[in-house]
Length: 420
Ligand code: PMP
Image (cartoon, rainbow, N blue to C red):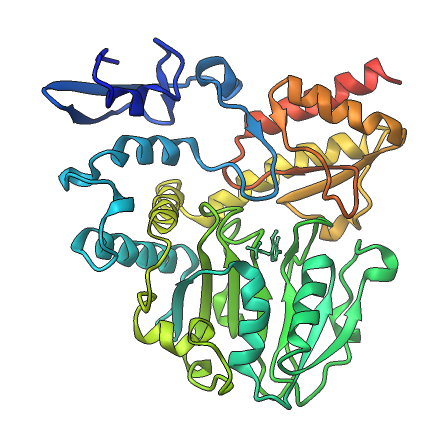
């Protein structure tokens, strides 16, 4: 990397250790950055071995956080390189109008890439919204139900429970199954579900982030409208999904596809336009669909990062390959737990274990704190289970490299040997 004494150069040099090469998946030369009168180039050298710890070269660590979560390194580096002067515009993407040509290209590409990734047909609107998935807990019933209408909820964890409770304010929400008494470790058999024929939709949380329970297939809604709604916040774009099975899918971006601040809603177009009169404009899908997600100022920078992630997923060959990688990562982690002779325990029923969030406990629970602290010293952070359930949780979203999970399982085996 060319040295520069310009203060602007710090913007690109600061996050790196002096003289360390920028790691990236592919060797490439990032476009020259003009720094006043000097010209600096950033060259990237490829990491040859998947086992090289990111911390060795760059100070980056393996981040097992549940969200906001780790992002693809190539995306962070691209954003870094483009940050100061976006595509020669003389300003960063954060500083420009959301109605200008540069941002218009970003949001359009984000939508078309996402449509490609998930095979979303023209029957569906793709909305980039704000307020997190939590806002959708209210927006969904407000848009899909008249005040007296009913909706069915299958609750397989804390997030589904929150969605159910919020919906009660805006419709008649029926709890048709709850896994609470079994500590949210299961998903029910679909044929035993007593769905209400009048329900406007059937709601599920496709992956419960705290409890690590994931639907591997989906129930068919038997309500007369045949509408299935899913919160896919924590497994969005982790595998192919047949969108046509759903009336509506929503997801906060901050696990698999970007930073916090963007919430994605994929909704069948014929379901748009019947929001309850009290619906705030910001929660009305029609307002956002009619204005192509630009009714008000969107979270421009966060959306730009999502666009880079979608592009990266397409460059990886799409979601079928991404799912295989996720299966491989989760596989070695669950195997390590199951082969530990009860030293580590994952409470979730095997057939519905999440590929994204792996919760486990130690038989000797007093060792959990030590486990988490020692792992952090080894460069593996954010392994503490959610405050409501305790234990350990490894979130291994798309962007967690295989090497990160390999390092974690090696640490787990070593920890077990040292603390029998
Ligand atoms: N649903 C699920 C499955 C989640 O994991 C989360 C956040 N962890 C939420 C909803 C709430 O999302 P937000 O914080 O974006 O409102």
